Amino acid sequence: MAGLTISPSGQACGATVGGVDLTTDLDPRTVAEIRAAWLEHKVLAFPDQAMTDHDLERFTQYFGPFGDDPYFASIDGHPNIAAIARRADETSPLFAENWHADWSFQEFPPDGTCLFGKVIPPSGGDTLFADQQAALAAMPAELRNRVDGKLAIHSARGGYAPDGTYGDDDVAERSMQIRPDESAYATRTHPFIRTHPETGAETLYSVLGYIIGVEGLDGDEEKELLYDLYAWQVREEFQYRHPWEANMLVMWDNRCILHRATGGYDGYDRLLHRCTIGFGT
Ligand code: SIN
Image (cartoon, rainbow, N blue to C red; front, side, top):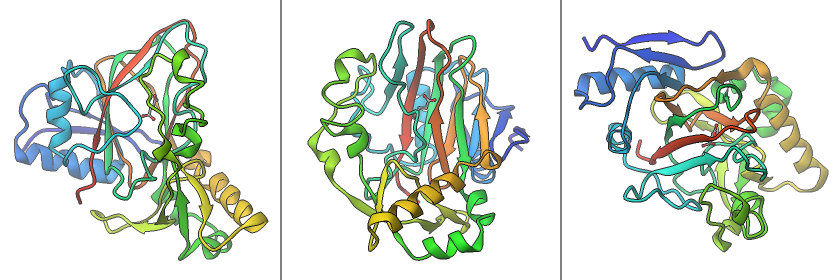
């Protein structure tokens, strides 16, 4: 047995994992055990892992190919790692403060994300997660009937288009290496309700933000559905608040989880390195 210890957060999702050293090669059995825990808890935190960028890349690839990360420059020498960075004196709007599922506007969005804490402020900067399988399971029939069978229209335009939140007027002030681009205006549809390809569970997918519309609806009906859904999806009972430590790796299942950054650490640097697990399953 690999001897993993798995301690659930006691919140809607999330667990902390011990009994494994992520700086060494993992045998297939350990990887399978981690994958099973990941599918069950959706967000896994591995504290006390003094991982290098190579370790982060190796760990990510146990779970799939690298994802395609648009709109970020990668760190030097590691084309699949992006730095989620904020300087102590930075005043630009917090990065990723809106709820989202990573790159849900892509045709093949990443299955998951691995985020490694390098410089963590003494307080603040938690990441919030919202379990979309739980949100769907508890959804009132009236709301479910309105969304069943509908396609969500996704786009990166609100964030990464030249006139988006992280657009041309923003990047100069920001320590994060964001690269806005015209391609962000593109749209793509995915069903609001999908079947998780590995667990077979029904789950809501993504949220208002990257979702900009509902195919076949417009006006008030479209807006009301998107806002009602949003209000349901991010209710506190579906959330897990994750506090960070340096040398902690967190992986989440992008197919059934929303996440968002939080602030509260002005005056302190924050730096995390991030890889995505590409679509593969
Ligand atoms: C992200 O959305 O990848 C960043 C989350 C965070 O900074 O807490």
